[in-house]
Length: 139
Ligand code: SF4
Ligand code: SF4
Image (cartoon, rainbow, N blue to C red; front, top):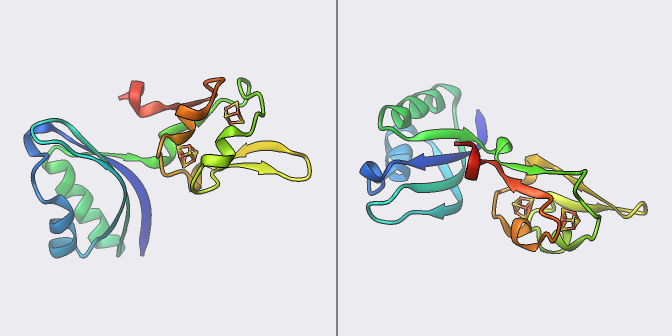
């Protein structure tokens, strides 16, 4: 069994195709949508957690890629720049998954990329620009 968080990027030409339905029906892939930004006739982006048997998962990835969908591993998407961080703690208050968290009793901020769902709350909250979403510039 594979369980993996990924970012799916849909070209505008296929953005209205029912990918999540097809993944479930044809490939037995359970998709837990964590975040989605889909608009008619525009490129779309979705953060999902996909669960499936190994064989089904591989077949589903082949299907997505054959339709022009780009699949990116989620852990590459958010980068915490420790050197820039002033340890103000603002991000740890709003982070919904405790990916950014305050280590106690040291009271130092840490980042666990495994827990990050790329909601981008911390990007807006951070006064030091110490968190960056790599997919914004890296694609
Ligand atoms: S993007 Fe969201 S989940 Fe990830 S560290 Fe920032 S606030 Fe937390
Ligand atoms: S909001 Fe920015 S500067 Fe403050 S603790 Fe979080 S990452 Fe560091």
